[in-house]
Each structure stands twice: as structure tokens, then as C-alpha cells.
Amino acid sequence: MGFFNPTPEERAEKERQRLEKEKRRRDEAFAASPAGQARAAKAAGMKIFQIDVPLSWTKGYTVAMVGAFTDSTKTSDYSRTIQAIEEEGWRLDHVGYVYRITGSESRDKFLASGQQEAVSGEIIGIYMFRAE
Image (cartoon, rainbow, N blue to C red):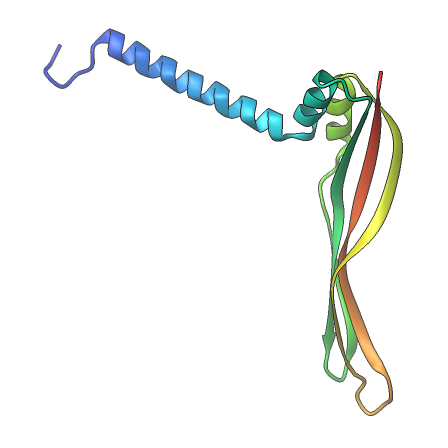
């Protein structure tokens, strides 16, 4: 072996540390996910588990002399998330949806009385699971 080349033992140790770090990163990512939180709740003996996920966003804006408009953006499908939670021993029991206003913009109408208002917000899905 050359002076600057690592020994096979050093390479093996470095690879072991890399694999350990990668496993720790995957475990932390899973623990932060809804399925990981469901697993932790089940292990803690909880009977009900709830997650709230943003399903879509709406951005409202007004344009002088024209009117009020909105742009909507849809997020990804959460069916895999729900399935992953059910695979952790939970049963979907109830679903609700709410619209949460995050802001608004208003201005006086042009050459008319009153105001135009555009509201921004998001639709939140609230999923309740019951332990099986």
C-alpha cells in the first residue's frame, strides 16, 4: 500500500459509517412522516390519530380597473400516505375539509362604489384514524 492509500480496514470502517449514517437519515425521515408519526402514536398506546394536510392553495389578487382573480394550485395525491398509515395498524374513521384564509387583498372599484376583494387560502384535509 502507498503512503496515502487507506488500508482495507479503514475503507471498511468508512463504508460502515456511511451506511450507518444513511440508515439513521432514513429512520429520521420516516419518523417525521405521517406513517412514522402513526407508528409512534400506536407504540404510545394512542387510540386516535389525526393528521392535517394541505390539499390545495388559492392565491387571490386584484388588478386595478379590471377586477379580482384567483390562481389555484393542487398538491399531490395523499392516498399513499393514508394507505401507509393504515398499514401501521390504523383505520381511517373520518375525513373533514376546511378552508383556511391566509390573506386577502382589496381595493376600491374603478368608477363605481364598493370594493373588490380577493382572498388567499388553502384547503386542509383533516384525517382521523382509529386504532385497530
